[in-house]
Length: 379
Ligand code: PLP
Image (cartoon, rainbow, N blue to C red):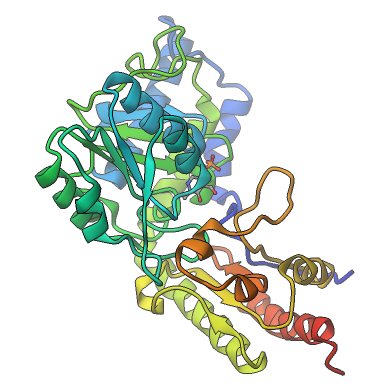
C-alpha cells in the first residue's frame, strides 16, 4: 500500500471546503433550533436557512422562494420527475446519458430516452421528433458525471417550449454547479437540481429549484416545509454548509476552473503519452467540464485497474459508483457508441478544487505502471 494519495474522484464527491466546515460547526453545537418553530432559537435557525436559500438562488439565478431544500441531488431529481408527472401525467423524456437518479424515475413513470451522439451530446432533432403536445416533462443534465460532456440545455428548452409549450424542462446541474455560470445557461429551464457534496459542502443536502408556475406535487407529506413541497425538519447545519460551499465556489469560480483545467490537461497529455493505445472519451476538452478526464485503456479491465490504483494510492473510478461499490457496465459509454471491448478498460479521473500538482504527478507515475502490469509488459 502506498502512503501517497492522489484523490482523483471529485465527480463522486469533493472534500468539504474549510468555509463550509466553519459555517456548520456552530449548528452542530450551541445553535440548534428547528426553523419551523416560532421562538427566538427557532427564528435564528430559520434566518440561517433563508440566508442559505439566497446563496442557492444567486448561484442558480432564480428567486429565493423558488428554492426547495432536499436531502441531496437524487431526491431533487426524483422530486422533479415524479413530482411533475404526478401533477400532470403525460409522456416524459430524458437524455440517454442521465444519472440513474433521473433515468430510474423516468422509467418508472413510463418515460423514454433520447439518443446522444458520439460526444454524448443530446440529438436535438431526435428530441424534437419525439415531443408531442401532451409531453409533460423533458429532463436533460447540464453536464455528465462520467465523461463531463456539457449539454446545450438552452437549445433543449427552446425546442421543448416551441413543440410542447405546456411541458416543463428539468436540468440536473449537480456536476455543473462548481464550474459553469448557471444563471446564463439556465434561462428558460423550469426545474434545476443541485447537490451540496459536489461543490465542497456536506453530503446529504441539495436543492430543487422550481420556477413559479411549474406544476408539481410533493413526494413526502408531513409538516408542509419548503412550500409544502418537501416536508421534514430542515438539516440546518447541512444547509448552512451547502451555502458556504456555494459562496466559496462562486467567489473563485473562474480562477479554480482555470487551475483545474490545466491540471486535467497535464494529466490527460501525460497518460496519453505514457500508455500506447489509450483513447480519451467524449468531446474536445473545451466542451467538457474542466476537471473531467475519461480514458479507455487497451488490454486492461477497469475493475482490476482500479484495484491496483487503490493499492498505489490513486482514488479513481470507472462508471459511476453504485451502492455496492461494484463497477457496472456504463450506460453512458453504450449510448455514445463506445464499443464494449474498449469500454471494458474505462477509467474516470476527476480533478477538483483541492487537487495539487503532486497528486497529478503521482497519478502520472502510478497509472501507466498499473496498466503495464495488467498488460503483462515488463517494467
Ligand atoms: N446527478 C448527477 C449528475 C450526479 O453526478 C449525482 C451524483 O453522483 C447525482 C445526481 C446524485 O446526487 P446525490 O449524490 O447528492 O444524491
